[in-house]
Image (cartoon, rainbow, N blue to C red):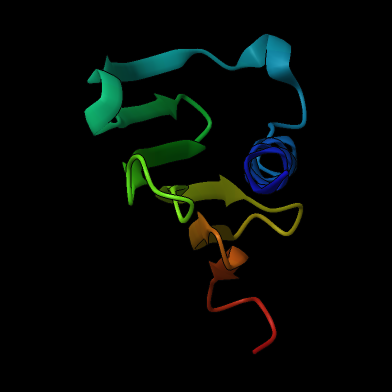
Length: 104
């Protein structure tokens, strides 16, 4: 159940970072390293300034406290033309985003 919540939160973050007119945007950089049980690294940069970097790892492997920990950052250009960056952690304690524009 926790993994579903983490995946859902990640999908929400990607949706919020989507460009206004995707037909005019190209991916300028993409990395995807799946290192198996040791985790993954993923990232992209788009021509509109949107970017995402993320890594995940499984902790407490083989125990009842096993959990996926995802850390990352995404950046997007808001409707106001300003650049916004969100740094996040998603783990057994939920999705925790931080950004200068987010309430504390």
